[in-house]
Length: 276
Ligand SMILES: Nc1ncnc2c1ncn2[C@@H]1O[C@H](COP(=O)(O)OP(=O)(O)O)[C@@H](O)[C@H]1O
Ligand SMILES: [Mg+2]
Image 1: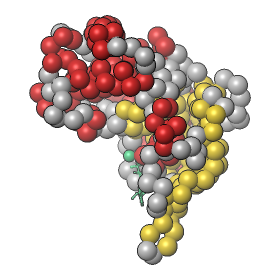
Image 2 (image 1 turned 135 degrees about the vertical axis):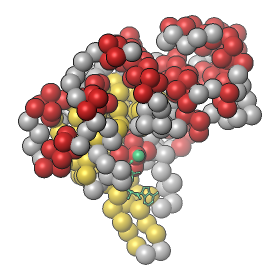
Image 3 (image 1 turned 60 degrees about the horizontal axis):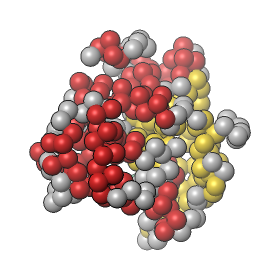
Image 4 (image 1 turned 180 degrees about the vertical axis):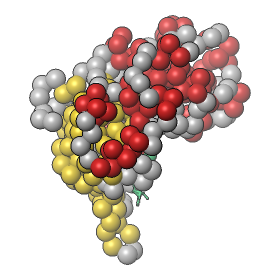
């Protein structure tokens, strides 16, 4: 994919190396892709193929002491690779939101959900506490989270994983980021919650034009959601295609194998609302 004006996020020649006492090891190499406004790019590949290393590189979350990131990562034309931590902190959450696999890790058990929700909004906007709370409740209502007032007063350990993941996405959506990186957002969830979370991500993309990098080892999820797909194996991209092309005419043997082993539940693209 070539860089063009409509690409919100562009990754060019990304090469990530880890250093240890034994020397260097390459974690990912020759990674090139772009995501256009309002599109969902699926990133698929088996465990250990480099999906999380790639997303953490975009967010500049690797430990600089032992991980070396080469190449270019641009957000609306601005280079992120090598940005100082202080600058990157402003971008994380506000411009690029990160939704991780286990939502429990994203919350501190000692504070209420509301406290964390409101603090996140306050730290990235000029809203005061009351305004931030209004925004939080409004967003929770718009994503059909039940009883927002009560949810804000609860603690993370009182909620299910599915509920927490939806709260996490609602927090992310409040700041209307240009990009959401969702790294296996449904892997830890039961089927019903998976569908709710996917529907929520799709709603945010439609309403705010958010571009989404959706990472999954599950081709069913990718087939439901993505516009384009990249397939990773052993730290490299081995195939890039439009989602329909990928499912109809996979080129690479590994992709064919993934397609053969995918769960049958999602075997055809259909509106997932139908399955709720
Ligand atoms: N900080 C690190 N230091 C050394 N190796 C790492 C580090 N992070 C990940 N790796 C290795 O990089 C490879 C890709 O990992 P990862 O991106 O987490 O895979 P996945 O596709 O399952 O998300 C794995 O072999 C993993 O062990
Ligand atoms: Mg991973």
